[in-house]
Length: 193
Image 1 (cartoon, rainbow, N blue to C red):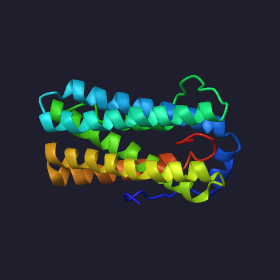
Image 2: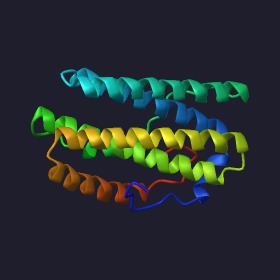
Image 3: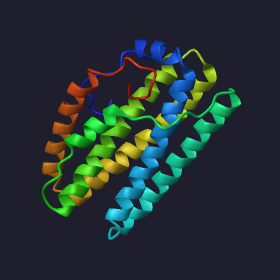
């Protein structure tokens, strides 16, 4: 899926299922951060009207997902805990190129965003297919479809604003890096944990 080198072991769902409140809280904050990421991309690249339009839609979807997760948290009698650090995302962020032109920075930020969406989508697929909770299984199936659309949007914009061959080469670097990185995860009851 998405050319990811390493699929999530379905046993991760067993770990995640041991603390649904933690999984949902972490997931809610992941959605909030995704919305913030879209806003940041808009703020730094407002000269691209098509990008602004599409990322506005993504931002709205991500904050809607935050609200949906929060509703599930409340319905189940849980409490939305404090924001969690996402070490996986922070390590991806450090891999982003910080040199080059403003446009190079945009392209790499789009690839960073595509990578997060790809892994999140893959995790939601694993959850939807393996979690015993039917309500959450259906919910994560729906979110998987949405995240796949976000992944495609980010990757297509990277190819639009960058040299396609260079973007494809850089995407392969992202995939290789993520493959090494994800081997350290899948042991906690968090979306990327």
